[in-house]
Image (cartoon, rainbow, N blue to C red; front, top):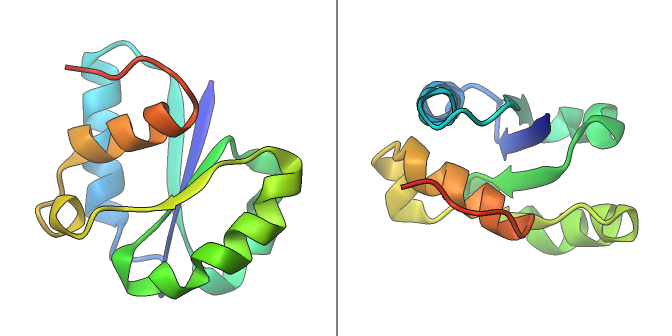
Length: 106
């Protein structure tokens, strides 16, 4: 099972995006656990994730997260602002899969 963590300011603004990503995963028979957390709670989940995506509002955390997660081999990136704003679950799921070197959904 793929574990994807989304990080935003309070952990709430990404809840709709998580729902849309899950729907895309189900439609494509991909086993995932996708969840969102607030910036303050990231360290509580470091041993539970395969990939981390940052909401555009916390893009300033990218370097810090790469330093924290890089040694663990966990890829980190910022969600594209347009995909985030449009709540495009398919594109964001593809971004996460791509970071892990996995085939993307269509």
